[in-house]
Image 1 (tube, rainbow, N blue to C red):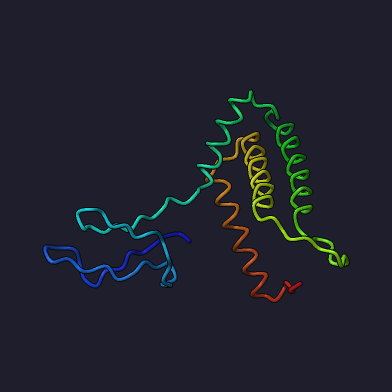
Image 2: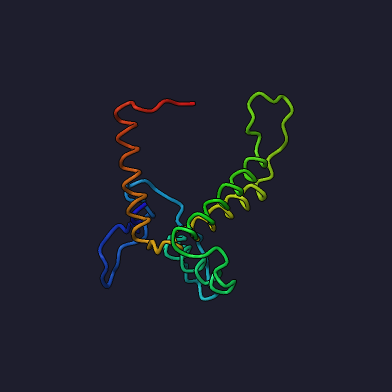
Length: 161
């Protein structure tokens, strides 16, 4: 989602329009936040700030600096962190029932799965930082990849599982 529209039924002014809804860039109504009422009777729509690549990278960079950058920089740092991504991916697989031939399954612990996926994200960020990639470069690469994938879908070059 590139932007959020706050929709009113009239323009700003002395008798401003009333709030109608919050919409995504495609004009679909969305639940963008939480309505709060203060003691003086005012109402506020609190919209949380989304997590961004910039925040992920800056926070992870600060954590790595505090630890003395244990996985290194450059290609060596990328390699070290991608090896950790692979380990965390295996740990995430252990949290789900990934073997379709097994008849005995277990209930997936959402918290444990989320933790393992978060570990992957942190090592992914470390790999990007090790090579000096910026949030802008990563966002541009992701948007380009989304465009390619949408074109593949439109050209019927993909199939469902």
